Amino acid sequence: MQKRVARFWGWLTMAAVGLAALLWATAIGVRAQQGGMAAAPKEQPYVVEYYYKAKWGHAEEFLALFKKNHYPVLKKEIELGRMLKVSMTAPRYHATEDGRWDYRVTIVFKSVSKSWTRTGICPSRTWTSTRGE
View 1 (cartoon, rainbow, N blue to C red):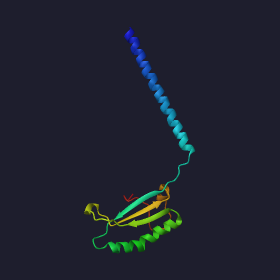
View 2 (view 1 turned 90 degrees about the vertical axis):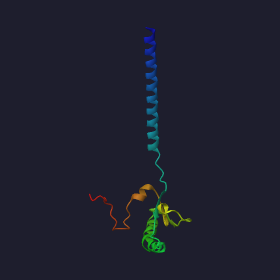
View 3 (view 1 turned 60 degrees about the vertical axis):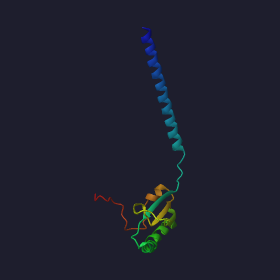
C-alpha cells in the first residue's frame, strides 16, 4: 500500500511540475508577443550581391555594357530612395573555373520591404510566374 501511495505522490509531483513549466512557458510567450507588438521593428539595410561571369576575353565589353545599360537604372533607384548604395568590384586573385567570377555588384537597399517593391522605372519588367501559369 505504501508503494502505491509513494507512486501516486511521485506522479502527482511530476504532473504539478509539468503544469507549472507549461504555465511559465505560456506566460513568457505572451509577454514576448506583447513586447514585440509594442515596439515597432526598426528597418535595417538589406544587402544583395550579384556575381557575374564574362566570356573569356570579353570582361571589358561586359563592363562597358553594364555601365551603359544597367548602371543608370540603379542610379535612378538611388535617387528615388529605394537603394542606399551600389558598388561593383572585381576579384583581386585568380580562382578555379567553378568558383570564378569577374564582377560582383553589391546593392544596399533601405530595407527588405523596399527590395521587393516595384518602382516603375522598368515598365517592361513583369512580375509574373515563370512557370507559365
